[in-house]
Picture 1 (cartoon, rainbow, N blue to C red):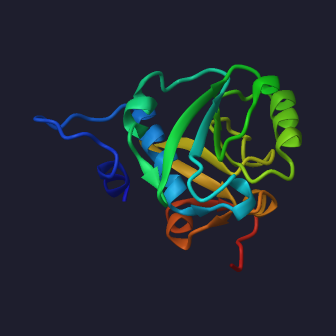
Picture 2: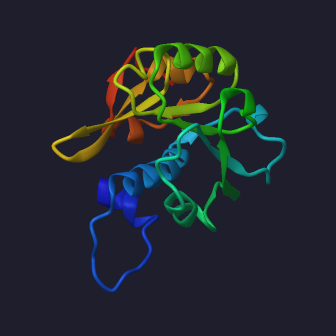
Length: 175
């Protein structure tokens, strides 16, 4: 399934190359948007862009910009925005952060409470502290887990197709 997810985002090349960990994660961020439904109130109108935010350290560099350039989801252009600090955080639909300190995560999730934002992180306790999706490595492959309760609190509906690929934490939705 990873190949299928990457195929939708990988540029054509004369020789196959192994994508880096962060290229895979950037592709996942885009593809998460294909399997998540946001409430209508999350967008200003039917043509508003889907905003992918990166908060703090940016492990993707320009790779995520290249992967997402020209992409659309449900007819919406996909745009990347970077925020250095939590106080700088603007509107976004998918928010990635590499930061892992517990105080920061507590503050982040308190700030986002009641907002329909798909939070994605890498720290071991990201989903247990309230994040929706956490990347982890298993046998040198990028995997992810989903906190279904956190998604429900954020008013996000996650497709069963995505849930089947994830390790589930929290209670499953009956949607």
